[in-house]
Length: 117
Image (cartoon, rainbow, N blue to C red):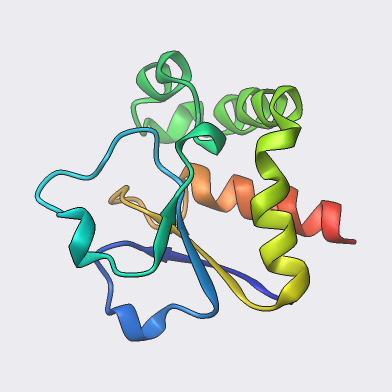
């Protein structure tokens, strides 16, 4: 039961278990049939307002984390598919941001790990 975080554009062989694209917007240049067995869960991604406000500004990262965690609390039912998949085995969260350290998928993984105990 491990939650992995991978950039969508990395080698698909690095993905483990069930895979979920956790972005609000569909990635440019990627056809849905190219992703294979990947489930798109846009409802667990940050709101458009939060995403635009953050703009991947490293100075806004701490505040973004807090605001996004609050948004996740408000949509906790949307987390169920992820929690269920993680209870059954490895789960990979796919993101598209260039910043591999400060992105919403890492925050989402933290929340899932906390809920899984």
